[in-house]
Length: 346
Image (cartoon, rainbow, N blue to C red; front, side, top):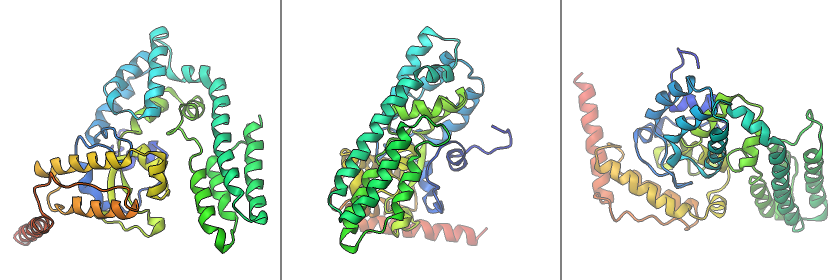
């Protein structure tokens, strides 16, 4: 990394991790200051922004597999399932080949992982095809043309013409279902989002990063657990850029959801309602410790937003919160009054 690059959560994620652009999320800036927060999507503790600079300094001197494992070991409790499984593989590799590098490890596993990745992709395409039976014959054929092409690309050994998950997802927008098919076609598009990525499949991770450098692979394992501002209701669905529509999640949790409706995301990760309660309990702890001042109504806003977006699946309890909704509003009002008075007297 260039010495004049400012390391913070915003540009770090944009530079090194393939997550959707966060857009205008300045209203969520107070959330970035919270610490020891449970990701409401994945249930692990989010790596705080203060860890970014120390990690980069360590990574700059990290050349071997054993050094990489030692660097990542400080964050092993924060790693997400896919990254943790890759870390376990690297740990075993480092015991036998301490002076080798991570790239060589991943290249050794590439062929086997590629085969398994193809099978994972076929399983999702099978699910998509099974839903096509609910469409009219003309629409179903158009969809089958797309999935058939994908299968051909997956089986092809032509490196210039490979299956691209994003290209397939975009190609579904070329199909114009009939009015009475739009709901089922929406289900099909959501199902297609479950095609494996480097954040959801260790085999996809290995295949992708076998061609990357040692440094890139190690950095990627770490970044998945760092914080990211997430829209509860995506902007593409009319979600606003306000703190009442923001969650502080892991980058991977944000990335894997994409624009998937929250209800569908819960189907993929059934523990989200439990994780959301853990998240809000952590946020309440931080507020009670003097953090998030001026946003005391945040837990109430999030409770309502999650209830609506999940269609009643996420019902958060605020029994441990010291503020009633009215008291929280008064606390916010008092904070902004003091802030305006301070600025006026400067």
